[in-house]
Amino acid sequence: MKCQSENRQTSLARVCQPDRIVAFSRGLRFALAVVLPVVLIGCVHPPRSVHVVEGQEYLVVLPPVRLARHEYIQSFELEIRNGRVTAINRLLDDWSLEVEWDTPDRLLVRGLAGHFPAGLDSTADLSEMFAVRVDDRAGFRVAATLVTETATPVDSPGVLSRSIPISSGEMTFRPRGARGLSR
Image (cartoon, rainbow, N blue to C red; front, top):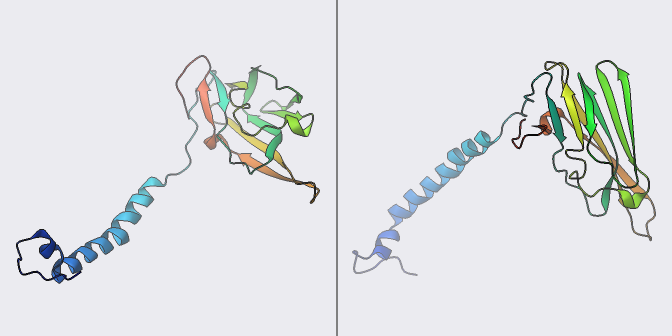
């Protein structure tokens, strides 16, 4: 396309002027070099702190976890520091649960699928399964570890597994009986 035109009044002629093209490219470079990184850095934030009230009960909500194709959660462990489980809201079919009170400030809840097909394809079935009461707000922590297994095709036998840690800052603690979310 020829940028010069006999009639300089047309908008095409104004846009195609070399001075305007250079000015536009400088503005674009500025936006990409300065503005975009500032916007992206502004979107990054530290992990959220857990805001809970001593003596209150909360439902533990696990965050979504990205699983590979044919990967299923086969077991989990929930470690509760300075709190205790006050209710188990449901039991999963073909899963075993064990609650161990190790020391006064540490409680462990373990779940294990009875068979591979009972594995979970997301954390949705584990969310809000447990209600916990906060005994000491300052030391209250909940950590979870999910163990997954991946079914492999018949021509390459074997089961791959991995462990996925989840910290208190990644979980949501919803006040029991309330609709609002608290982190």
